[in-house]
Amino acid sequence: MLIDTITVAAAVPADKTAAVSPGRRIWRAAYAEPQFRVGLVLILILIITALIYPYLTPLSATKIAVLERFKPPFFLSGGTWLHPLGTDQLGRDLFLRSLIGLQNALLISMSAVIIMFVFGAAIGLFSGYYGGWIDTVLMRITDAQLAVPVIILAITILTVRRPTVETVTLVLALSGWPAYARVTRSVTLSERQREYVRGAKILGASDLRIIFQLIAPNVLPPIAFVAVLDIARMMIFEAILGFIGIGVQPPTPTFGNIIADGQKYLINAWWVATMPGAFLFAALLGINLIGTSVEQARNKVLGGTI
Amino acid sequence: MVSLISFLVRRILQGALIILLVSFGIFAVLRLVPGDPARLVLGPMASDQVVEVAAREMGLRDPIPVQYVHWLGAALHGDMGQSYIRAINGSQVTGSHDEFAQAGKAHVLDLIGGALPYTLQLAALALLFAAIIAIPLGIAGGMRSGQWPDKLVLYLGSAFVSIPNFWLSVVLALVVTAQFHLIPSIGYQGFSYTILPAFVIAIEMSPIFMRSLSSSVSGARQRSFVSLAEIRGLSRWRIFFGHILRNAAVPVLNLFGVQIGALLGGILIVEFIFNYPGLGLLTVQAVLQRDFPVIQGVAVLSAVLFVVINILVDLVSTWIDPRLDF
Image 1: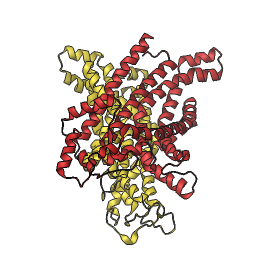
Image 2: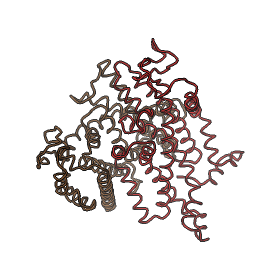
Image 3: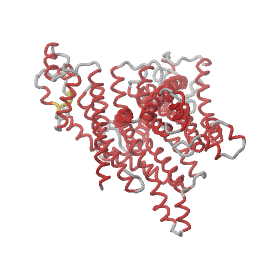
Image 4: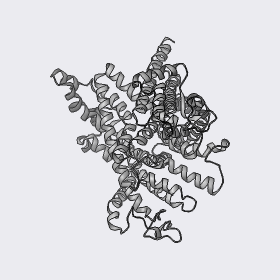
């Protein structure tokens, strides 16, 4: 339940914060939490390394180097700093492959979250604004989507359509939109009773204009803050698809296909599967720490939970 | 009483609509994907003509809505069809030239019925583990909000959701089973094979419940009836169980209803990795082999579970908190 901005602003002590937009205040409240800064530092280090390191190193993420195969990580005897996480069965550097995997995972999951947010929000806006049979039909479709484990749909689609960056992104987006549709609908339901919406109707504004120019800018930003957590969720999902063999295909490195490859050599070279997984864990931890503190800050600033 | 009955009727009708939508959606998706089921049943050696005849007999050349009505009619009589691939005795038969090959194929309901007990056992143990992790931590975090138990819930929750389930499965199978021979896993030869998969699912599920419990407990503590109960001189235990926990339980229960699909999804993956003979393994194999009737059956089953559990959750919620109206 969203309290409107005016009451929230009035509830805040009348100092400089009152003039700041709710979005700003949410970011400030989140930044005040130590876990937000821990997460931010963690994920920024990883992303910056992922952007720079591939240009600095002489190694290649895809080229086969048989002489270098199964080199252990740096902390084991025989390991070197040239291959901090060791090398895989084809002699490729696991650190570099994990970094490229992170690039792909972030690209895919962020696009998927944007698509699911836009689609789910649109469904929720229409459903909540029009009500009646449109609402009933749209919400039952949403429930139906929630009722089937998406993984069944995902495997079905991806065993038939060649898994590329685009198809994987769309399949991921399919998994997440119902949550956004439900939340947006419930907020829109109460929003359409507000004076400014009724005023706009009396002034003769069209439904589409009211929905997208008046209601959407008010209800969507608070919901968008939750999307940070979904990026991490989608990264895991993308890795699962890759692990089953229906994610983005090799030679493009993804966490899923790196770990699936490494699983075959677990007994002799355990690091091939475990090290990239630990790397993925670190990236997810960063995003999840940011996500939870942003969510808590939002609840604190706007009051209540959605 | 009247409101209870009208609630049940309304929810069951809505649920039936959801199940219909799911079954039609999955049906349409499966018919639209390339790959001829008749070819799958008869195998690569059969001539095109034989395949064509078989396809007509199986009704695969009818328009999709007609096929769906046929399927639905049979399903309402308790016949979910037969697997394209699996034989009754459990082995997989493909490429049989016998026109009556279908006669020896397993019924979808039998396959599901055979796998379901394993999945239920896994789900129950996973929920038990998740409860053991989430309930004490969640309550401690909520009762001491802002202090270290609260922080612990936050960091532990973030760490747990950040562990990819398939990776944890691989690591546990390697360390616990292969390296130290502590708990067996991979396949199923007894109850102990359930422990590791259940643990992985519990790790995945517990943060959601931990956080929700923590925030609803701390929310309930700030309500006026709790401070009033203190003034009224009620014992701490009575306040805790009768006022705080009772009020905190409803949001957590509702969350469980919403999460049921995700729980099933997690079970699918973990079963597949541990080669655990439940619904998940059945489903993933069915999808990889294009065994449409089995996929259809599992999708309908999961929709039914979703609907039934959500109705139960609402009933229990109103029983716990009578202020909620149907």
